Image (cartoon, rainbow, N blue to C red; front, side, top):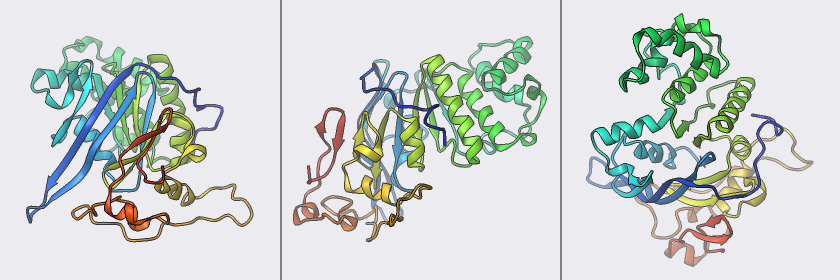
Length: 328
C-alpha cells in the first residue's frame, strides 16, 4: 500500500466529466431461461485526471461493469457518454478508436502477454495496429516506454517470463500508455503483487496521472489502498451501486451499512484495545432471485419492513455523497 505522503487525496473539487455512465444494465441469460443481472441501472461519472475507485465483494459486478464499458461484452441497456458519443453504441472503426483512448491493465500480467513475443514487440504492437510507428522506430519507442515506467531500456529484448511479477505489471502499464489514452482501467492491477512492489506500482500510477492527466477506473478489494489512491469511490453490492463518494475517505465518510460492514471486516495492523475483525453475517441472496427490496436487507442489522418491500434509490445526502438506503 502506498504511504500517505505519496498518495494523498486532494481537496474536493469537481473537474471536467470525461465519462458519464447513465443507467447501465448488463444481464446474462442462464440455461433455464432466467436472467442474471450483473449490473443493475448503474449511473456514475469519471472526471478528467482523477481516479474513480470501484469496490465490493467478489461477484458484485465490478469487472462486469468495466468490461461492458469496453464492449468486451455488450450492454443490455444504458449509455456511457465519452467525448460526446455513446461508447455502447459504437461499432466498427468508431469502436476501434475508442479502444485507442481507453486502455486496460489486467490483474494477471503474465496471462495478458503472448509469451512468444519480445517485450519491444508487446509494447509497440498497439502502435503498429494504428499505423503510428515504423519498424525502424520500434527499439527506440520500446526503450522510451520502458523508461517511462522505470524499467531499464535493455528489457526490450527480453521475454515476459524472464521478468518478475512487478516488472511485468509495469510492462502492462507501459503498453497501456503506448497509445496515450485518456482513460486507463486498472482491474485488480495490484492485487497479485507483494506489498513492497504494490507500493512502487501505485506511486508510478499516481506520478503518471499527474504528468499526463490520465483518468483511472481503479477496481480493487483493498479498501485501504482505494482510500489512498482514489478521488471518488463507488461501492457495489449484487450489481447495484449502494454508495458513491466524490470526496472524503471511506473510513471517515461512509454511511451505508454495507460499506461500514466492509470496513469492520478489514484486517488492520493498528487495532485499538478490544477492537477486532467483524465478519459480515447473513445469507447473500442469489443474483438469479433477488428480493424485491434492498439487496442488502438479509445481512443488514438495520433492516426494517420497508427495506424488505421497497428498494431504496441512490440519492444525494450531502454534496458529492450518494447513498441507497432507507435510513437516509
